[in-house]
Length: 294
Image: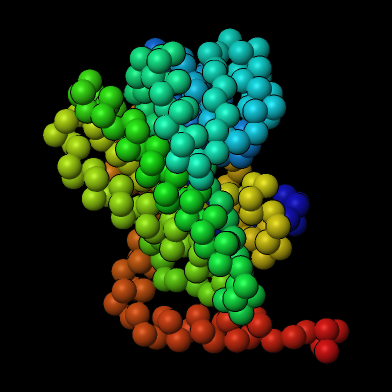
């Protein structure tokens, strides 16, 4: 949606539905200057914007994603701006690759102070279109749950031995709101890692390792652009989303959640049956063929 066509009060609607947590450059620099920060999914979107912001604040940024060429582009832009960036191409869906890249990171940098678990795979597909596509569920879980969990498991021993470390999970507000049709594979995988990390955090806090979860609202990125409905909804830019991630890095809150998500979470649990029925009705209406398709 073009800025000129946005209705009055659009920025407020964006803030209410997606949050607008901000952090000053000085506060971020105080928190991360001289620290080593590993950011997954840092070739584009939220991860790229987060890595650049952390580097400007004085962190040594380790860029992890599958595409080496694009990571080099991001790294060169960071270096040109006076920051420190190192490239680590790896496929999080491959456990052996995760082990190899963490071993290399620790050998070259000694430790990781901050892990920003941002990499994710989005998928919006009805179950009727998934009968012969079980691999969609496997791939989504590999990127959104199993890969991030493996990465945390590889880094935790070093963090616990040092008595220091912070893990930021860039999750989705959909984990906290009533479930919606067509998002089953995506929301299930994000919910799995969210719950896994929350359980793990109870075991490692006494060792100096803390966690934060950013229940991110809609962000207009390459990942969301293929879904036409999302393009018309109020959302954040990658830079605005990175602001929330950096606030979690510096402030180490338990979670960052958009304002309207908390009541939606409470009401969804309190009125679970009517909420499910409401979304069932929405699915039926949205699934009707258009006249021009008949």
